[in-house]
Every structure is written in structure tokens, then in C-alpha cells.
Image 1: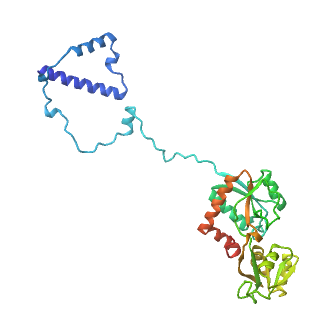
Image 2: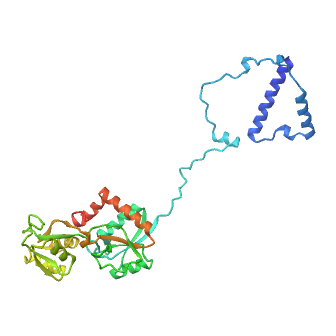
Image 3: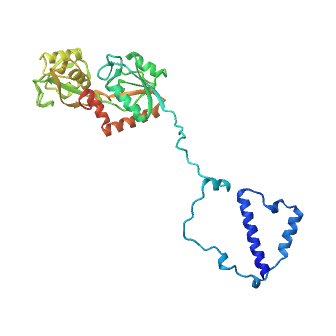
Length: 339
């Protein structure tokens, strides 16, 4: 009986040693033994039988007591000895490789204040420029904005020498036929509108800018323009003063030769805010934005194959309008939103 107890204890010791060698990567002794010796050992083990009644339970003091205490995790050194994978998070000093930022070249004219112009030091600024920079920030793109002559903007875009043009280009429409032959160019949604609007002298502002309130008033308008066509249809009871240019309209209003002028809102804003009309005149009433007369507004031009970039710009523009950042840029130049 004692022999069996000693034999069991010896087996436990041998098994513990083998497990230790196994986890440290050392070869097991029986794997090093000659094949014949190994076969004999295995045969002897198979022929040895032990009666169930001869098995004596191990004394309680030799059985490890269970513990409810949480076991400490193995450290890196122990795991490496056991040849187990060890999680290796990035070290604080290791730099994460970032994808390169998208690079875009954007063209503008630089000669159309307050939309795009150059400061005394030669820096590009204006509503178009600030809007383009804000868009690039939203797109997480690295943008370079350059000035080019008006006549070169679209040709350079079509030739692949620019990625976009932000220069108050009017989106093609039947009402605005000055944008032609743009088969290779696409536009974003409008980034500002181009409605008609009335302006009056500051000392003679009408109560309203409706057909009823303006009945009998002398309204200067550019001959042959969409603004003249709109007045003929919707303000038939006024006295139209048809002149040859926007400059002539401004002069007539400033001199009191007309009660109001009706023209492009943005052109009137330029004149009454940043031009010579600031002292005498201001806009009155609301926008008249019928697209059949006044078009689809100004858009950003891109090459036809850049539809994905166009869609991203549209999403960025919509976000700027929604969160108020568009209005903040517009107020800087026009004291109101021109969207």
C-alpha cells in the first residue's frame, strides 16, 4: 500500500517537472530516449494494473485548498517564457502614420470686391476667398488659392490646371445666358443667390417694396435686362426709367432722378456697403428670387469628372448654412446673409 502512495507521489513530481519543461520550451526527457526504451516503458505501463480498493486517498494536507481570491495576471516576462502572445499596445512615443491630406488648387479672379480682391499688400481676400478657405477646412483639405484673369479661369480648369473655381460664377440657366459652352464643367449648388432687389435714397425710403406701394414711382432699371423683364410683368404700374448700365442706375438714384433702382441684389450691396452709394442709398424690401428671371445663383465650378468632390462640397456648404458659419462670413462683407 505504501508502495502505491510513493508511486503516486513520484508520478506527481515527474509530471510537474515535465510540465515545467514543456512551458519553458525544453524538450521532454522521454522524447530524448531511444525508441526501443520508450516502447518498453509504454508496454510496462499498459500491463500494470492497480485494484480500485488499493487506491488510498491523498491526505487532506497534500490537497491544495480552493481560494476565492482573484489571481494576479501574469506579467509580460512570464508570458514570454510560456511562448504565449502578449498584447503590445502602441508605445506613447510611437507616432501614428496619418494619411496625407488632400491637396486642392482653387482659382479666383481677385478683382471683384467685396467677393474677391487683393489687399494693399497683395493678399487675396473677400467673400469668395473666405468661403473657399472655410470649405477646405471642412473637407480637411490642404488648399492653395490663386488669382487668375477672368477669361482664364474656366480654360485653366478644363485643362486640369486647377481643381475648382470660386469666383462668383453664375450657374448655367436659361435666365443667365452669359455662361456658355461648359460641357466639361459641373457646378455645386449655389453658394449665394442672385435675386433682384430695390434700392432707394436713405431720405426717401418707401413703406414697402410691393407693387401697390410703388405704384406711380420712378424706378430706374437696366434696359434689356432680366430685371426690366421682371418689372414689366410684376410692376406694371410704376414709371420705368430704362438706362444703359448699372453705373447709370446708381448715378440716377444718387442724384434724385429716380425714386428707386431695381437691379442685382449683390451689385447693389457692393455699391451701398463698399462703394460710393453707402452715404446716400440703401436696399429696401425683400429679395425677388424667381429662378426663371434671376437664375440659379453662383456656384463653384469643377471638372465634370470630379462629381465626388462636388458632392462633398455641397455637403460642406449645407453644413455651413445650417450651423451659422456661412452667415458669419457673409455678414463680414454684406451685413446680412446672401445665401
